[in-house]
Every structure is written in C-alpha cells, then in structure tokens.
Length: 89
Image 1: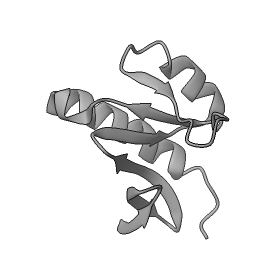
Image 2: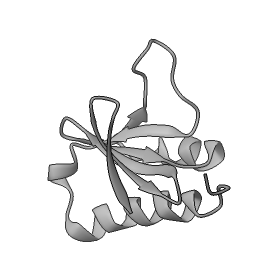
Image 3: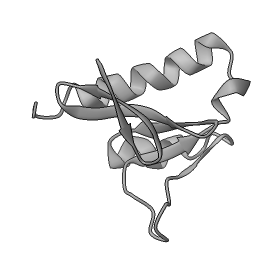
C-alpha cells in the first residue's frame, strides 16, 4: 500500500490502482459500479461528485470519524476486494 496525494486528499494505492482514500472527513470508496450502486443503500454513502458528474464506482462515505472500527474495516475490505480484481499498473 502506498499513499499518494490525490483529489485534494490522500489516496491509498494497491498494485498501482487507487483502492480508497480520504477527502476531508469522508472516506473515498472505490467499488465496482454494481457494488457502488448497492452501497448507496447505506445512509452514510453518496455518489462521488467533484465535477458535477458522479464517477461510476466511486463513493464518498462518512464522515469516516463516525464509524466504529468494524464498520470502517468493512468498507475498506470492500474497496480492497474490488482493487484486487483490477489489472496492476
């Protein structure tokens, strides 16, 4: 895992792909588009929209500081599971 400045926050890279990150007080979650759509059922999740157009498969979740460790671990595991399906860069 490598940290990299991105999106005005910190991204966590796995095998050269962004896995997740932090923007302000929110988690940036990268999931498959289908999983991201399902995850919008969580009241803490919203589409990642930085330019006026939501990015498919990307969500803001949080504020992350409100999560119990177990809940945050679940989100991070979902991000990692998706990232490991991506081709290494």
